[in-house]
Image (cartoon, rainbow, N blue to C red; front, side, top):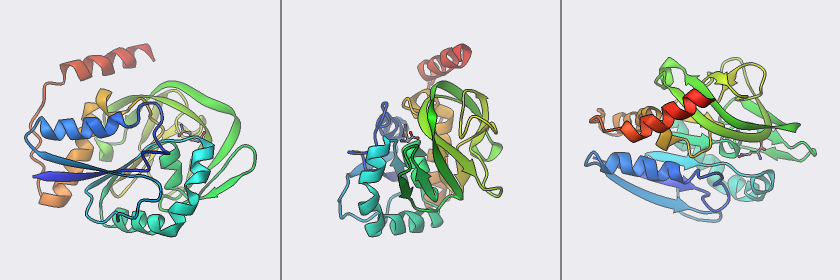
Length: 241
Ligand code: GLN
């Protein structure tokens, strides 16, 4: 069994070690004797999104989010919508997560019209939301406690029908007000968690892998791994936040 993984816009959306998520996905497959092919599709790449099992999109500053708009609306947005509707697993972080929604209006009034796949929008605020934080995933996203680092100006509001990824236990999450964090629709997962997120949240990584394997092969043969180091990192952060 093998998964084909896409790192979309690695040249413009890749903050605070986001690329480490790709390494984590790849390692946790290889350690189990499963195949993992990683393809990076930078801004302007003509390679189609068709055929990928997991698509990863990291975070970026307001400037980078504006820079990629032209490329996004020259076909990428259509491909992302098609893949997500087809059940491809997406992990999208911060700027990449905001991009899955309708729009992001920066604090200085610049509007980025995004993909509109997730029923959410984001408004920039003067005060940034910065710091280590933690949240509990919903049952449908595995129920684990995720620890991470957030740094965003955007306050994201989910439409009533859209399920959050989890509930904030400490920190800001989507907007610092309603205790929601991220969003989960079909197999699209959006979160504000940088860090990188997956190495210290192995349970959540395995939810993504199991979802992608089940979609592709009808079963997820995920043997347990020795997660002693990963769990120690997780628990240490969890305790301190
Ligand atoms: N520029 C966006 C914001 O400030 C996203 C930041 C990020 O990806 N860390 O909200």
